[in-house]
Image (cartoon, rainbow, N blue to C red):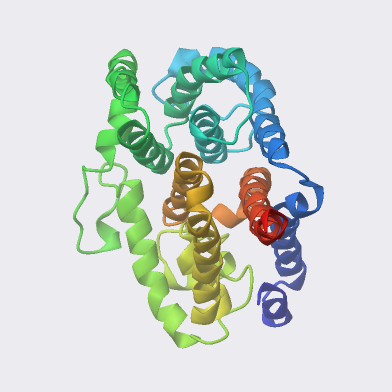
Length: 340
């Protein structure tokens, strides 16, 4: 659907580029189906993704040293191009760390599990310094599920998180800003002292975009058309425009309502595959399902389809687990025949 929409997109080159970017996400999802040979490979590939976070974690200290003079405005982004992308990547790595601790199929020595466990507090601190609230919420849900469903000792660790907010008041300001909504009757009332917070600003953008979606509900306006179109229907952006900050709405605008349904179907089909494999590794599938849920929640308030490096990692992880489940499903009848 993305590729077909490039034919009537306002900028064919930009639309085609994004279509190929999306195709690369499928490629990373499909890759494990060709390289995974045994259950042990799941451990290797998951640990490989966790190990990939070491260079960004080391560089994060350099980034912090540069921004420590102005912590109120500082947002950690490490080697990534934006703090939000780094935040979503950290949620993924934290989920995999919990997966290594919880999964029945991961083959890791006690020393390695200890190192992964000790790595978690550092990643949580980095996540807080990104000041990405949607990632905070997604990670909080994942940790609560892990604490209540798998290991209640983690509840004690969660009690230490408020100390980080006390140590850095700018984190608390970032959290409370979203509750301090500004009520205005017209955009003309906005000025340097009267501003919309980021969530209310998003809501205003979405409400302005919905009538445009309904103008072309079947085909949409073409891939990569949202940003150049915003100056025509949203008064709070400049001539360059802005993206939708909502994956579902942007796909509805660009690919039509069938495009949004296709996105929901895609995410739902991955969830269905995971749930079908629940009995093979209940605690592990629970954590991976939380990672998928985190992606679903993050897509509500961010432009997830643009984040190339994060999506490569995310879809590679999803592909690894789905490839293992498919391998187990295919091997089950053979095992039954051997036993007979």
